[in-house]
Image (tube, rainbow, N blue to C red; front, top):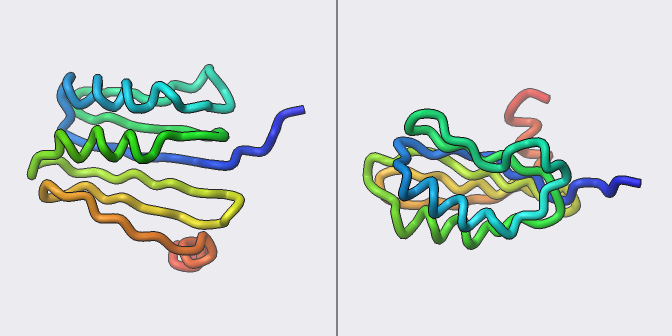
Length: 114
């Protein structure tokens, strides 16, 4: 029997070079995804995408990897959905800073028209 995913994490950052991709790959190494067939981290040109569903994701390690390499031209976000707590934490990358905010998934659904 398959367990229900506790976390869903989706994000992207650009422009990302090989050094940032490598740091993110190292930071994501401890993640425990539900399905090994889906890549956790992908790079397409200068865009890096994170896509994760599972029991454990090293959010702090990923944010540390981004923060130590964040440049003013970087843009992106990392959304962490905690399905048990029914909360979303959004980390936005822009202007060389990481800004974080959180809210109920009900608020997110209402805002998006669902």
